[in-house]
Amino acid sequence: MIILVHERPHEVVPGTTLFQLRDEVKPGADVIVYNGALAATDRALQELDGVHFIRRGEMPSAAEMEALLMARHTPGVHERVRQGVVGIAGLGGLGSTVAVALARTGVGKLLLADFDVVEPSNLNRQQYGVDQIGQYKADALRQVLAQVNPYVEIAASVIFLDESNVLEVFSGVDVMVEAFDSPAAKTMILKTFRKHRPDIPLITVSGLAGYGPANRIRTRRILKNLYLVGDEETGARPGMGLMAPRVGIAASHQANAVLRLLLGLEVED
Image 1 (cartoon, rainbow, N blue to C red):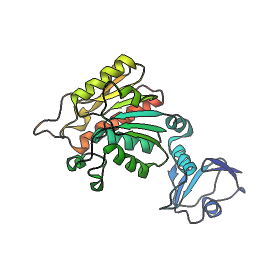
Image 2 (spheres, rainbow, N blue to C red):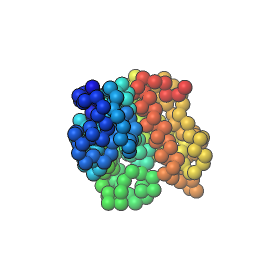
Image 3 (cartoon, rainbow, N blue to C red):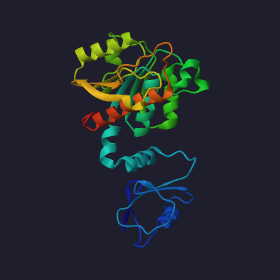
Image 4 (cartoon, helix red, strand yellow):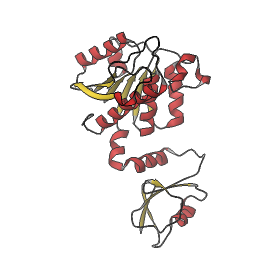
């Protein structure tokens, strides 16, 4: 009888149980993923069941990590995601959160760019730690992502992006994420990509400040290959700052739009 162990065929005697297979393949494994779900009890295995055995605290190999993601995402989905190349311009609350989500999803390569450093005021909404204050965001985010998924390929640039370099920095992307704070920078990247690379989907944001209702943040296509996330109203201003919940909601909208585009799906139904 064939069982898929870490996505590879493994022959067992009919009647073998989940725990017996664990003791054979990875004794001491204390996390078992059985057909995509966590399993805490023993059971008889069936032909072509898929299982993964994990020891808590042990770093998985690249092959094991790949197999785990594949088991959770289904092979067809994961294969397309891991071939994706995604660019993120701006690594603040939006960009750092999008990057973490995509690394957890198993996107194959992330191109990251920002010229700024981590400041104390960033920590209310950005994916950095107190110990990273003063580091360039591009370098700090590379460290964060290495803890999330060390097998995602990262190209992180400390650079001030403008129309003279943005296309080169993000050469080869399948999807582009705009995550700037500056209106001028937003305009620059939209104009540059719309003029020179209109074939590349670009996901931008407008309206996510404060603590208004979460459901007002939405994703919609405004032009071919141009998608807008936000409530389109609530900009940052005195008395209406940027806060982690709404920034995180907008960033997750962006990350989900990236995922759907990589899978060849419509971003909005």
